[in-house]
Each structure stands twice: as structure tokens, then as C-alpha cells.
Image 1 (tube, rainbow, N blue to C red):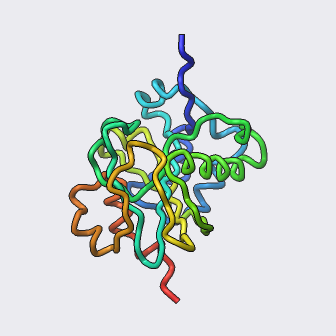
Image 2 (image 1 turned 90 degrees about the vertical axis):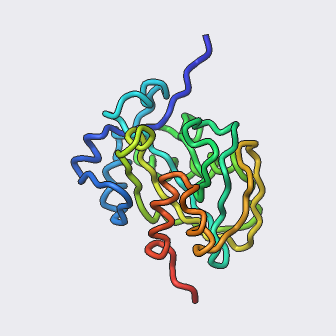
Length: 208
């Protein structure tokens, strides 16, 4: 029997104790210190986590930008999350699985998570330039089946060059687009990307 995929989760009640929200939450430090506290994150079989809203799967959602334009793509038929196939996205990322660099229940769990994010992104795209990484928001949307069992950790990577190529076959039509261009195709986007697009100005530093 094949071993089930294990995914990183936190109990919904932990999120509720800090303060449940819908949409984007920008007071990230108040939440991260609780969500990544020793003993709080754990792994569950994905089949269980997908069916149990008592848990929230932590999903890094990495938005990449260069010179005021944002990386966007369409999820092809090989996408792991079949409910999102055919939808445009501005977020790269996915479930966090166990790995040698992700020990649980220690004081450095947050740093280990950041390493796991880099690994997860590298599975989907090749970023051939340096970048900064900031966690700019948390994203929760209990209005639909997918959102009810996921909690997005929104990262903003500011790239030093627009050098990104796809590694996963499920990534199609990849390009950098300005916010105004993205607004024109907003109706074709997955819900999380729509929520982030509407708030881009709030987590993007002003141009210098």
C-alpha cells in the first residue's frame, strides 16, 4: 500500500483563539507567533485534512514581482488541486510535506518552514535570480470547499530580474503582468489570487 501524503496543519481553534478573519489579514506577526509555536503545527494525512475543517492546512502562497509587474500563470490539467484547474493564479506554492529540513516541535520551526517554502517553490518554478522574501499577509476564505480547509501564508518575493521558468507541467501561460492587466483578467482567477490582487497596493512597497 502506498504511503499517504502528509501535510502540515494547525488546528482551526488556534486560529480562532488569535482571531478568526475572512480575506486578508495584515497583522501577520500576531498570528505567526501562535501558529508556529512549539507543539502547534503537525502533520496529518492529506485525505484526512482535506475532509476535516477542524484543521487548516498551511499553504505558502508566494507572489513574485519585478519592476511593478507580477508573475502569473494558468493552472493546467496536471494541477495537483483539481478544483483549481484552468484558473489563473498569481501565487506559487503548495502543501508543506515532511522533510529532513522540517523538524517538528522545536524552537526553530519558523526558520525550518521558510526553508521548506523555498523547496516547495523550487519544485514548481526555477527562480534564476536573487530576491527578498517578506510574509505580507495571511489569507483565509471559508466561503468555499477549498478555502475551508486551507490557510494561506502570503509571501512577496521581490525579484532582482524577471528570470523565472516553469518546472511543473501544470504551469502554463506564465508571464509578468502589471496590476491593471491583471484586473482585466480578474474573473478568470482563482479566489485567493482575486483577494490578493485587490490588495496588492497594501503589501507592495512604494517604488523608490
